[in-house]
Length: 471
Image 1: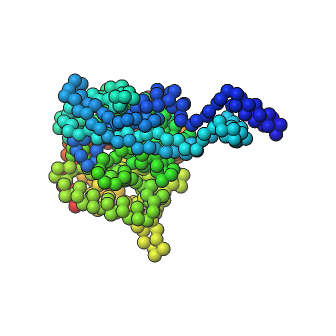
Image 2: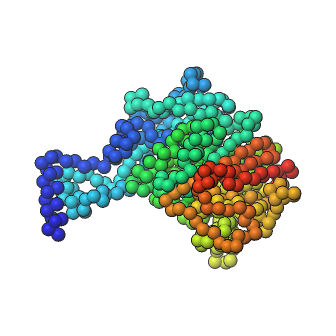
Image 3: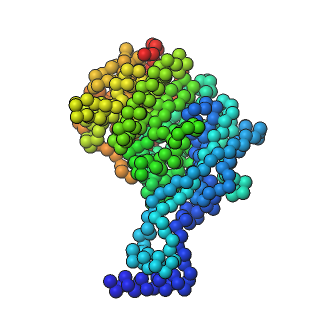
């Protein structure tokens, strides 16, 4: 107690004589990434409602006079200048662990500490429209008064011809620490062999930690990827803090003129209809949210099926899988999985599960994460195998499920049950990520890279659909 009291007196005296004023404006972040108004955490995403637009999102630690992106076609011109909006991202901050509560209280008493328990930064969004397909753009973001970012480049390939297959890096559960797959993904992006990323939930571990600074570090870590290709997402359980506040604010999924960002959405890329689901609504959401997503999903699948002549592929992705052969007791390891069957009601019904709709409307591929490993299942529905003709994945009669949650995070791997179930085709607990190539209207190729084994292709299969699958 005497030591604490002495520390209290000394720190208080120093504060008074030196004129300390400890203001929590994230000087740490400003030092690491430049001035507080310098753009950071820059990332691209496809606009949901506008097929010739790219959303560019970035953060600053302080507000700026304007939010602007300038793009140059093929690196030189003509220039496109797009203006957007900025909104505050407010997070609970953490008192420094280096000082005792008594010291902080003393500094506050003498008026030398202003600490609200909140940390604010600003999320900027610009919707750059009028983009030409298969065209290379250089761009920078920021503000003429506060400063500009470096110049980045992307190729707008949302509706490009399939002279070469569209390639998507797919993974979930990538953390700021132990991000084992990040370097290989960055190299692939630099080589131009990936057209977009699908991150299937669980970011940074966690986005909100340390007043959001862990999320800041993560977003800056992925910036070599996310400035070059669209970074499409869905929420995971690690984003649940404060009603998914960080996820909702940091990731732009739509630029609609109406409501706030949704936790579920769909978008089209050439001959593919993608559906991003929130499995987390089933565990954290209110009943009206659960019902809204279910009803939206069915109506979206009805529309997608009516348009299958133009976009034959329907691919869904969400964080928690409906099936897995893990030994940790997670929802996917249970016969009556909530994601698969729905939420149990007092009258015995199960509501808002996904599987019935995925089967009824002939979803081709369902991608999941959450389990920190890789597992490919045979085509199935309600634990019944629905294999195809000569090959299980040639004209299958049910969705193909793939779990790819081993990109790397601080929680390490999950284990499996033994023996391996008959419906589980391939599984292993290597760090890695998936690469999906859509070659044409009938052939989709899937590879899983193992970081543990030097980046080799540890799993590979073709999903082939040569018959009409409209429902």
